[in-house]
Length: 94
Image (cartoon, rainbow, N blue to C red; front, top):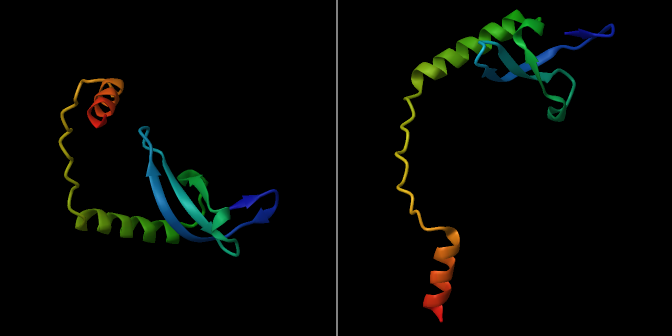
């Protein structure tokens, strides 16, 4: 990736985000820089096809190997207000 004549090399692709419009962003670790300089970059701005291909293969493999997450059923909501419950507790303690 180049900015103002400087060239920065990607050391590692850390994460990926996929947006509703299908665009993908990747969190990158830059070679020679600490983690505090990691950035999110759009796929179209990347120029590291080998790293990108390796990351996407690993991502797809992990996605296939990981069982689907079970969603918890929502708990029933007690419709008493917080203030009513607090006043009941205070009343019961006295």
